[in-house]
Length: 180
Image (cartoon, rainbow, N blue to C red; front, side, top):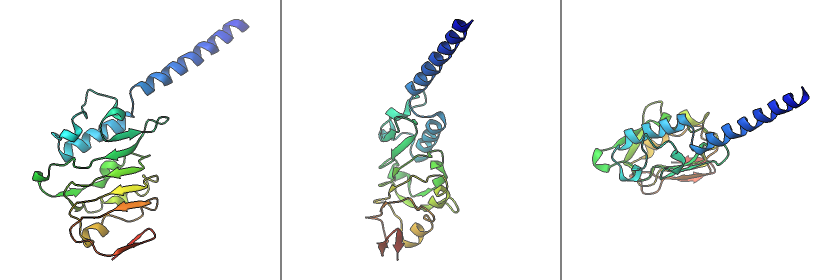
C-alpha cells in the first residue's frame, strides 16, 4: 500500500515536471502572443520588421524585436522601431495595446510617425499595470509639447525616456519629470 502511494506521488511529480517543461516549449504566454498580433495588425500587417510575427508560430519569444523572461515567459523587451510604414500617415497611439505585457521593462516605439496618444488612452493607462517599465523610446516621431504631455502621467518606474528628434519638444528633464 505504501509503495502504491509513493508510486502515485512520483507519477504526479513527473507529470507536473513534464507539463511545466512542455509549457515552456511554446515560448510566451498566449494572451501576450495575441496582443502582439493585434499590435502588428494596427501598425502595419505587411511590415518587413515583423515578418516572423505569424499566427501559426506560437513561440513569440523567438520573434524579432521581442525578448521574454526565461522563467515567467512574459515579454520584457519589445522593439517596434520602424514597425509602421510612414506612408500610412500619422499614428495616434492607443497605449492600452500594451496592457497585456505586465512584465514589460523596455518599449521602443521610435521612427513610427507617432503624433500623440488617443484621449484617455495614453501611457497613463499603463501606470498601474506596467510597474516594471523602465525604458521608453519615442525617438524620431512627431510629438510636440502638448501631445507628449497628454501621454505621460504616473509612469513612476521609468528610468529612461528618449524623446530626441521629435518635432517641437522643448524643455529639460528634472528627475522623473519633463519640464517645459
